[in-house]
Image (spheres, rainbow, N blue to C red):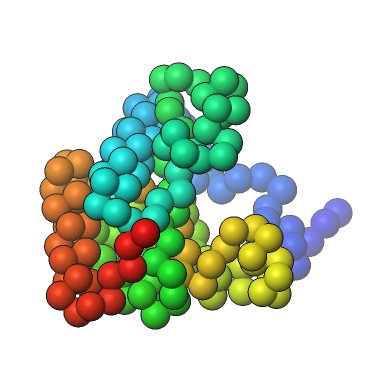
Length: 180
């Protein structure tokens, strides 16, 4: 017999908690709708950010190096995913933008986990990829100011976009905005 109350089995569990299993079963039928909106918003935001002159990395944009590959193998109904990156150049600019987006405009939350219905963002170079050395980060395309965003689907697209624009305006006013 295994002791299910200690160690990795207690943390990871050989079976799912009944409440969690029930909640998942209630949400699975709507997953397709949520993913379509998640991906649609990421594409719209990436296009608009690019038009603003910001450095955006998103496989749905024609200039992404893997765009054609993903276009050929991806599911046309779901687009190119709900994650995008915005390169602010420096960690200071990235943190300032995320602070404005979270605390001033309520666009999203700073978090290293990117699975949530709200927009979540992190500065990859100083969080999830902080164990990599500078050479490895450069090879992977992770600049000190890379902001990774998982675009949420709460509120209307235009409402959330307006919140993003307000944060960018504040960055411009402070002289910290890094455009292409």
